[in-house]
Every structure is written in structure tokens, then in C-alpha cells.
Length: 255
Image (cartoon, rainbow, N blue to C red; front, side, top):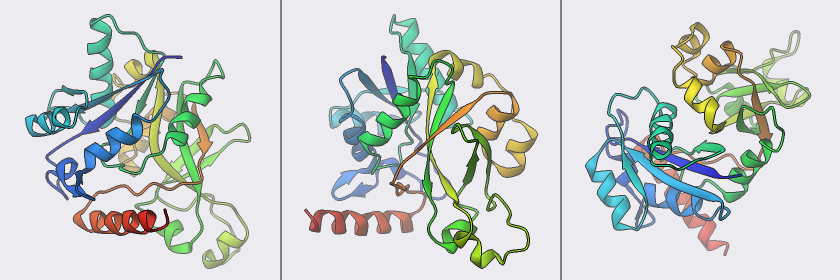
């Protein structure tokens, strides 16, 4: 199964302009993502997708592959779709496309493998990841997207609110009565499905929760959810970068 990992990287972040080029442990964040992605299997190709020349040059400088894409995309998924279409026009063919955001410096090979493994089932259209929530603070934060799944592992719903709601139980006690899962925002698509979902218009549930994956569910696409033991540290703000630096130091001190 031939797999393409696309790493969308946008310079003009509202909360952290120039984020992909910010230094983490002496290297740009985008380089960390690239290096981790490229530890995957030989059948996996990778491409950074950006709308900014500064990121393009930085990626080329450390030896990565990068493609300039339009600056009008609404999401990283749309940017992935442009890369896929461009490579197909050049004669390249892929079975699965994985979207790893350019602010995920600690993405792991095992997570990429878990997504690819979902497509061993022929009817898998889209795959993503979840991890167990272990604290009330994590459960109640709207920045942590929660997911509930069917017994077969298909996503039923994603929400910024804790789901399911436990009637008659103090919310502070919910984790003692129910397993809750945080969504880890890495996606994989069958190539044809990626081209289809990038043509969909925003949906009511998506606009209510500001969660793109609800658009796919509302339009009838099935999302398979694999479990990972790692909750990646994404970087959205300069404060997140400081936390990532601390995590990196702690990780390196254990080696």
C-alpha cells in the first residue's frame, strides 16, 4: 500500500506567526515533524505543503521535500488535496494520504503505522486516532476534542464538550464511571475519499463545533478510530513551544 504523508505548514498563524520556523531544540518545528514522519516505512513518501516561500526554503535547506500550494485553502485537508492532485498529474499514484499538521513535532512512527493498518479493512474511508483522557481538567477543556465510537471503532461523534453526558452523576466523578477519549488530530484518507471530501461545503455541525471532521460524518463518510497511548504535544502558541521545550529536555534526560 503506497502512502503519502502531507505536512501542511502555514506561516500566517493568528496566535503564533511563523510557527513552523520557530526553533525547538535548535531546529525548526517543521524539521522535527519531517524527520519523525520520514522514519516511517519505505513505502511512505512525505511532502511539506505550504503557501509561504520562507517555509519552502527552510524545508529545502534541511533536505526535505516541499510544495507551494494556494493561499486560499480553508484547512490543512484542502492543502493535502492539492498536493495529491498535483502529484497524480505528474504520474504518481497513492492508496492512502495522511495529514500530519506541521505543528506536531512529536508525531510517532507507531501512530502513522496505526493509521495505515486501518486500511487493511477494505471499506475504511477515513482513519484517525484517539487516546484515553485521564484528568478532569483535560476532559472539560474545549481545546481537547472528545470522540465516542461504536463497538467496531467507527466514530459516532466528536465534540468539544465531554461526551457522553452521565446523567445523575457529579461531573467531577465522571472519569470514575466512564472511559473518555481525546481525539488526536492526525487523519488518513483513501486517495479518492480525500478528493471527495475537499469538495464538500461546510456543514451545520461543523460550524457549530468548529470541527472539520463533523462535515465528513454529516455527509455519510465513515471514520475509523485507532487508539494510541500518546497524546501528542501540538504547538499553537509561544507558550506551547515553551512546554514542548521542557518536554524535549525531560525526554532527552531519560535517554
